[in-house]
Length: 66
Image (cartoon, rainbow, N blue to C red; front, side):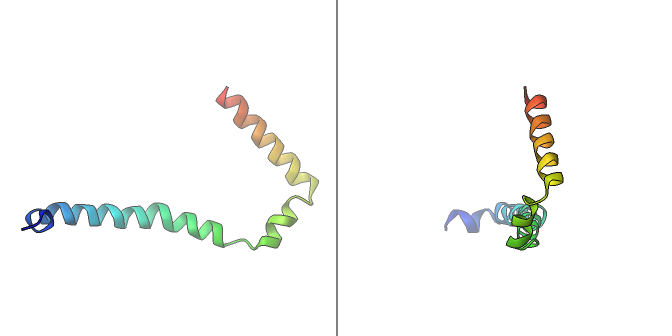
């Protein structure tokens, strides 16, 4: 007998953890990445307002990290 057939609860637990990981972490990340088109990302850097907001965000992230 191999280890998998001796520990069915372990297999069930690993399956549940994998399912939860896919449902709550992997799927939302993939959904967010797939949503905007490439043109939307390129248009983001054409607007001074969004560049300023990005700079402010990076400054705040650096200050809070320091």
